[in-house]
Length: 184
Image 1 (cartoon, rainbow, N blue to C red):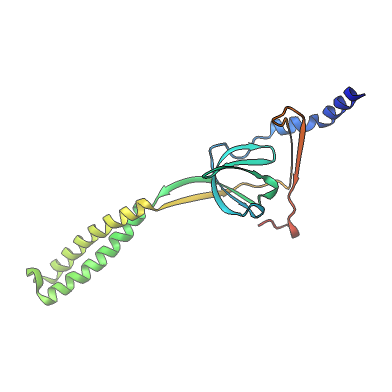
Image 2 (image 1 turned 90 degrees about the vertical axis):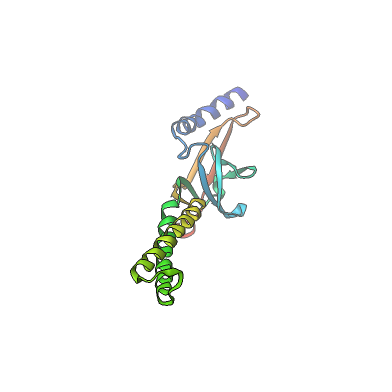
């Protein structure tokens, strides 16, 4: 009788295994993710996805942790990271040109540094401080990174059939409840 119950259980659960085997996780292991899971005190927590096991995300932050999908209210994957070198150089250079031109104009009025031609003094000040400001902006922009995130849609119902570590058969089911249809 016990063997019949085992065969019957496996036959009933067999469709879940083929369903689970056909579905590929939407995110590859090693991807940079941003997770919101209020039950775990995580709000837009950035981590690396180590594995996607049925109804659990295995995340690597400074330490590894399991994050049940039932707790996740928002999941995003990083599309790319880029530095802001060009933007920083343009902003710093623009500020440097403006300040340099003002200083050059004041030098003309005061007659300092032997600069008597107003246009030459303005140009010299703008060029000198424009280059300086651009280099400073370039350095600041290199330290600043912009990241683009794409939200991963979470299913309302997730089911999986997977052998646990002790080789027994197990089924996991998690249901996300969203009041009034809004999960935020």
